[in-house]
Image (cartoon, rainbow, N blue to C red):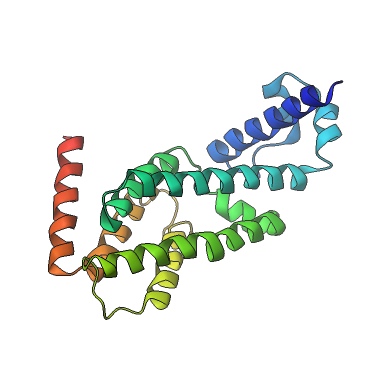
Length: 212
């Protein structure tokens, strides 16, 4: 088959796996299920992906790219660093509502190489995004200038990904999107100057009005 046709099939397989993994979890979706959903043979999948690990790895590449694009989109749409966090809350909540909470657990336990890619993305790209947000907020005097940017950037990373831990938040007890919002707002209030607090209150009111 022509190369472009092969690439299209490979992308369709990865995208379908991405959708199924996020909805149902990784462990519960077999290669047979992905093939059936696509209307192709399992043999066709194995022409492009040697095993499930390779397919999961490809899906994680999609997730990382999507996350990077969303971060840049948040920056473009935001009025200031506090507003950027509120824009991010909206975008991440939409993703979390469609995401099976077992995905991160499945990754860590059954696909450690792919999980390491998520960890690398978190510790490099996301850390940089958070650090830049804090620095810009200090510059605009909406975050306090006495905070330790490096410590709080890493704290933000840890608390954000903590919501996927069943040890902290047992599945079914709290919705992931609500946990994320609560943690994010708490974090902002800890950073904000009086000027920043007014902005937080303004954007919270806008959210409440939007969801009435």
